[in-house]
Length: 426
Image 1: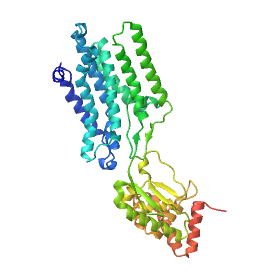
Image 2: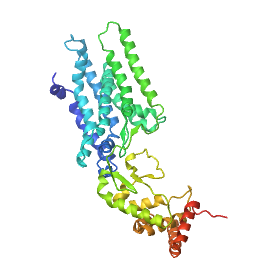
Image 3: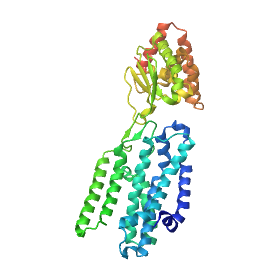
Image 4: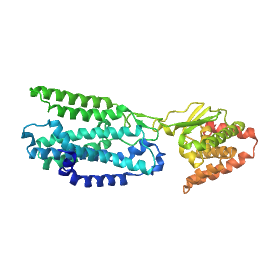
């Protein structure tokens, strides 16, 4: 039977409009952040709409495959003389189902990539390809169920159970069920799922699917078929579960997968390429601000490198004494990146800092480096907080008195404030 004939006679005729409508509904309601916030990073743009659609795709594959299998069973196809192998017959009737489940996975990311004018990358295809393989495994499961249970009963139960079993894994503990379910999460900027992350659910579902297909092998000894199928299925399930048993809520990710641009020296600064146009001026302003703080006697450390750590995603690597890692992407575009670096340079030596002392030090640093506008912008974000307003008024009065004192006295006060954090000394 041709694909077009299978398409016209199968369940896709009535299922496709409903499934595609649900797909678009999930896509429109699940889009919580503007596409511009992903900075044309294709893996994030692809992963975001998919995070709510994996369960739907798998449920469609399993449910409709069960229906098609039951249709063949009702037509007594398996009782006819074998002109083609069972695998070929199954593949023929399941091909439209697979195409429909794949459409659930491919249409929303394609829309997002087109809307954001972002070309797909090899890294961005990792999650969709893994989910497409999982759709095949769920289709095999559904087809097998349809061989034994009437389709009127099995199809709705299997579709709902499959959806629940996948979608609800994100709300359960321990974490391993979500990692083996194929319900992948969002991907941060610069992040890419490691191959083991996508291999674990494929191993679990794929081993079960292969085990079920082994039962159809033309082997004379049924016991041998059952033993081999059980060994493959149990081995894959145990291997997948043991592999991810120690993972946290976030599976293994590769970070820093973004092209960076660097310039200057003392300090050398590196930012993602999409911010490259800001970099020369940013480096000059940063060098000038750090020089002003050193000349004022407030700091003595000179970083040799400042890197935008936004590309690190959730795996934020720590800074060292001369190599600073800071999230600068938004501050660069908002114009307050230099102020953030000034705050980083004026680092307090304790965890708890008295609020007036903190604001006084930051305001003094902003005045010395020409970043008062950025400082005021940060304070405006706290408008409406009476405690913050009171602390700000006191800090401005303290800094006004401090600026009237000699340079040495100002430097001594700043160093003492950074050391004691405003604590009263006996």
